[in-house]
Image (cartoon, rainbow, N blue to C red; front, side, top):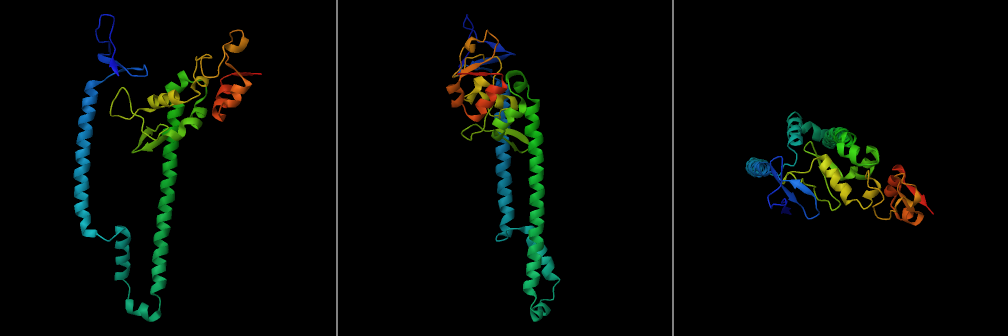
Length: 252
């Protein structure tokens, strides 16, 4: 990464920020004040997390050996109300124990089901909504948002209420313009598209410059991409679908 200079050797500015050129040729205006603020915030958050962890560990020492505090409290309350001698005489201790276990497991299952339903609803709103509202998808891609989501949706997760994207290696995608911050949705989807081997088949205005493409195959300059049958057969299912959806043609 290096500074972009003009013909006189002066640093090129964009909105008052110096422009850097990454190794792949992408130009990004570097927000130095924002980066300093981010570093300071992350340091403060790390300190807060560390202090909170130490306080929690100290408080939990008094409850060593108890895996579930709520369940333990409920069990103590039930036991305190039982006449144990009568239960022993009647041989019903196991019955009571089983009933307590069933009631507790039922509550756990119900809460788990509700949590999963809420998580699914949150995902559909955050992720699905982001695809449908994306300015990058609407302006730069030649396929509709639902097809983009079917290909790249699995790369996005909702963490702490925020949309976070992961690349093909399972690493979080961070912003180039805001170092230390995860990329927002449009920057993340742009990065994923750039890494996609068949991106030329889904980008608008990419002509026939992509891998396996030809110069319109004698289509009279109608703008449609034309590839051979062998090249089409070599594409993965998403690539084939994207080529057809974008109005591409297959020649024998």
